[in-house]
Amino acid sequence: MLYGRKNHIMEEGDAEPIFGSAASDHDLPKYKLNQEPILPSIAYRLVKDELLDEGVARQNLATFCQTYMEDEATKLMGETLEKNAIDKSEYPRTAEIENRCVSIIADLWHAPKDEQFMGTSTVGSSEACMLGGMALKFRWRSRAQAAGIDTITKRPNLVISSGYQVCWEKFCVYWDVDMRLVPMDKERMHLDPDKITDYIDEYTIGVVGILGITYTGEYDDMKALDAKIEEYNRTAKVSVPIHVDAASGGLYTPFMEPDLEWDFRLKNVVSINTSGHKYGLVYPGIGWVLWRDEEYLPQELIFKVSYLGGEMPTMAINFSRSASQVIGQYYNFLRYGFDGYKDIHARTHDVAVYLARAVGKTGLFEIYNDGSKLPIVCYKLKEDADVAWTLYDLADRLQMKGWQVPAYPLPADLQETIIQRYVVRADFGMNMAHEFAEDFVKAIAELKEARVLGPVQPGQKVHGFTH
Ligand SMILES: Cc1ncc(COP(=O)(O)O)c(C=O)c1O
Image (cartoon, rainbow, N blue to C red; front, top):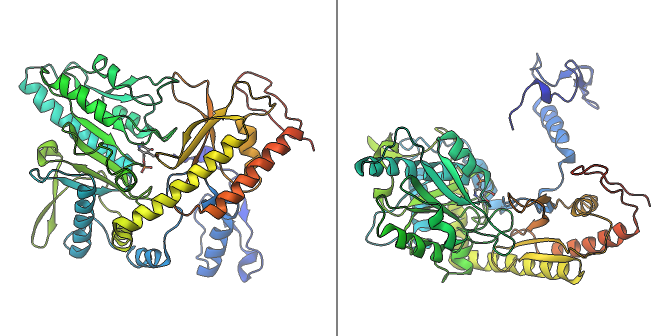
């Protein structure tokens, strides 16, 4: 969010009372700096209290981001907060840890032995996608110029399904690239590979396939996409590469569906991103982006930083940031190993499948995702469901029990469909799932008894209860 004066909730001059302390006779301004310092214990209390009504992160089924790490991991991360990830010379062991993480991920994504993979940590998938997109654009430009294509007066384009995450729109706006959207439809809630050649041309910097569409958790069919792109590239003036946005699937699928070919096993997949803070099981923000070979990362995007008397190539939007997230990622890799990740994800999967069944049993919902791929449960109210309430009402009702469960419209072309989605994470155990399922059934029963006020104007969300 961008903040400004309009975001002041109270009038300027309104003060924060510091009750129960010697400082309680001081006023603390909210939107400008207080003149005098206050004691650390009071500052702690005030900030902590400020955050009181934010809800319990672990009951937040809206987020993909990790809400739990082991005590040893948080201790380690707390003890390394001061390390700056960009200072490779000062923190060479940290640089080595990042290097190991990149190699571990390259191995999970089947980087070919005869190619020189490259990769880096990022703040999250958004930065990783930005880097992946920039590499696509710069590489396209030099190849298009070599092929005699006008790269000055015409804009390049990026092709992606309408289920894209907003970071791709940002990339296209920030980097002057047209976003060509392949629409999803009711039958196919992911990119239709058969339509792809209608959208690509010599101005296409790349096609983005999504391993875990944010709205529904569905996967694009990367193998079919690769086959179509391969066919196109055989005669193309400028070949089209694939970037896989595996923000949520990149550190889940390798453990749960190792035979699914979506990664560098596919010839035209040149780069992949993932969020370490999603199924990499690290607190936000850590992401990763890898290229299958140096060839796909244009030199002009690489900046050198000093490293042990020499230089080290880096690619990043940010300069300084804490290395503690990278260290947290390495802790998890070391601690869990392949089997540990697999066990954790398998349990998460079981919980998602259980929840989808619980939702299905009510008979009221059409399930779009039953947790069998990513552990995401996603559904809409059946057309003929005889109820007077909406999914927004159900979300509000569940929030009374502390559960944060979003309801929202599907993207363009499907926006009439309102869905609800749960993202099941490792710390959402079966016990919690049983409790949630009970609250879910109760919420529906209560809504049946409630007098729900319908919308007064189209698009207006007005509802209430009388008990
Ligand atoms: C498919 C996809 N891409 C990119 C992102 C952005 O990820 P991050 O929050 O790590 O920046 C998300 C986040 O949900 C996502 O689902």
